[in-house]
Image (cartoon, rainbow, N blue to C red; front, top):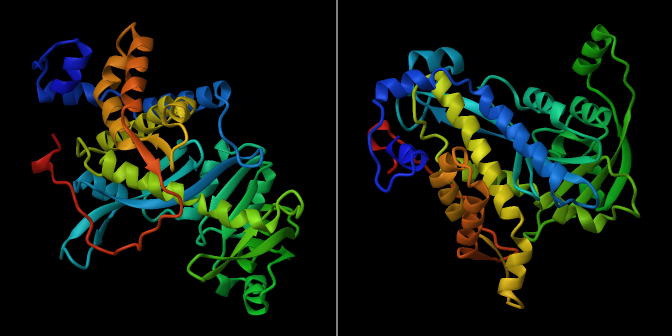
Length: 373
């Protein structure tokens, strides 16, 4: 609070302006939806005014989910439920997060924080109001289904997803025979057909392309896509295409570790939702500010061994420290230019092809008695 008012009132040193009680009462008057509207305005501005990155003239989006731990109160238990853990010998409150993420431009288009009992398929369908024609959506193997693909095609979009080979006849055929790709039709399962008939929904088989790709480890996986043109989208494109989905996983690391998403500044439901959507907004603002620096980075680094990029940890920290000032001054452009200059002094090399084995370990938690400085 002191840091916020220091920036807001342009003071050299932080001073106490309000009590914690007064701040909490005022905060309760702010709807979390305000941050969603700001995020949407931010996203719309970016796509209307920037020459944003595309993949073969398609906007490349990934939908994926994660889970977060919430403060344990009677209110959060009622809204999100509590769950037992194997190593803590007590219950915790967990919620599910789902987001639509532009993997090339590092933009969160939509994000939801909901009860963990709501499935990923249900949430994916809720995201579809943000999907536009010529969007290509990437999914991990838990998502592929006739219903999901049908809804994407109805929006004029395309999809590419990894499939669980054991569940798909054509995928097993490719793996057994070594055939690189095949066109096949998929139909809804019995339960979906029953629901469609009850709702009076017309349906027909969807023609899909199954693609066998081999990873650097020698492991083979099968992708399913609506991109049927072999000439425009040759087999050689898809291994690297699907690898781009990993950026949505990295975005969750950014949310949880760099922005400390689970270190909520309040315990109430409204405080949790404010923090969540404010974090998504701040991440987008930072991505947009850094986006326009690509050409300057190329000129600065020249013909070096590696390409360079902005250090996002530093960039997020700088934006966090000045965001109150950005929204409360008439010298916005001066501040933005100063931020960009600071970004340019913190560059990191991009080392392609690097990979590390994922290690399973106990997750670090943030405790209210030990707030970050």
